[in-house]
Image 1 (cartoon, helix red, strand yellow):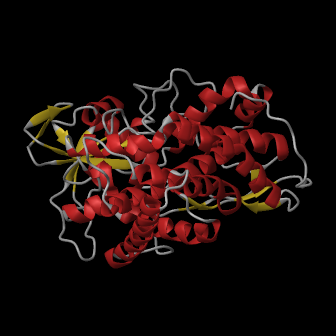
Image 2 (cartoon, helix red, strand yellow; image 1 turned 120 degrees about the horizontal axis):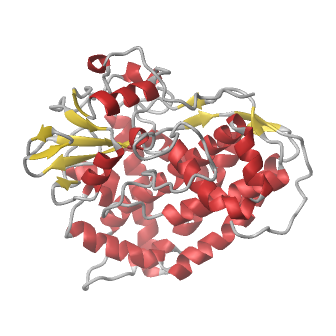
Image 3 (cartoon, helix red, strand yellow; image 1 turned 180 degrees about the vertical axis):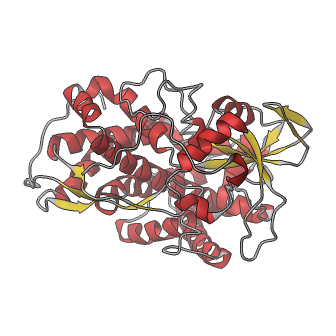
Length: 432
């Protein structure tokens, strides 16, 4: 069953003055892509009011940055467009912003030092060890559904792989996987009634994750093991180590980003491959050769993180619009990844798209996604196994989407396939 989006530039019934990016009603409209296309053309840097969040004062408003070139400009100039006042649109107290965002809400030199410490946990040996288990886990996940003939693609397939990988990286036991998933759903699902609607719910989930992480970190200081938690808690840069509180905040960032974003990329990838069967056939015909460009196209197409914010440190001009020091600028990655000035036929899903310098992992600069290579590996291996084990798998009904202006999330998505025995094993084609 296919629900194909148009490959030409979409339209909207809204005038440019009627586009309200902070209005929750905007995010249930089917013509959102058309609205962003209109902004790129008519008002690429546009002013918007902020929505009111219960428990927080209403913010002063923000500039929406929608063109690809402008998103790169903002992202790659951290001295002019800082992260230290928060990466979310709302003005959270800085302690709270760092609690949930860790490094993404910091600037140099503090960001630089913390990232150097964190990099000690992502050595080639450590990452290679994790990557080696990706295929084994993907096979076990498919084994669990192979005989059923249908399942929820998100819950049973897409969410399982990145969740298990990130938990294994951190040394989290399998008995705790489900609770970690529930808490990350709450943190990134804020605003969706199915998950959380209040700051209090958000704080409770974050506090539970942080306390879990701090206890895990203390255990690894006393008794190190061969996991990234141990590497991080015992790494030093210029004589400094992560405190347990800093590790707690980084843990929230890592398990949320490493789990939710990759699962949504895999989910959107399955939907796109169902909607564009000719692209699916092209990839299946030569999986290893096409995989590098196909994975990048899935990330561009999905754009799992819709936006991040920066704050101007001085008066400046962006695409002819005057920006004042202290103004917020919100980079809309979803709009940048559909910019006709940067991509040929951007509304066409093309597994051989090249070049494809998308902003699905951020647009360069100091905050480029730390786990980009691992995410690429997980996406490639999962589709390699799906094509081999469940070759006719397809989405069978419209997905249930997360109500969010921050995460392009898929909550549930039915799929169907010809049942097969879970005990089947095949040798790897390699190259994934």
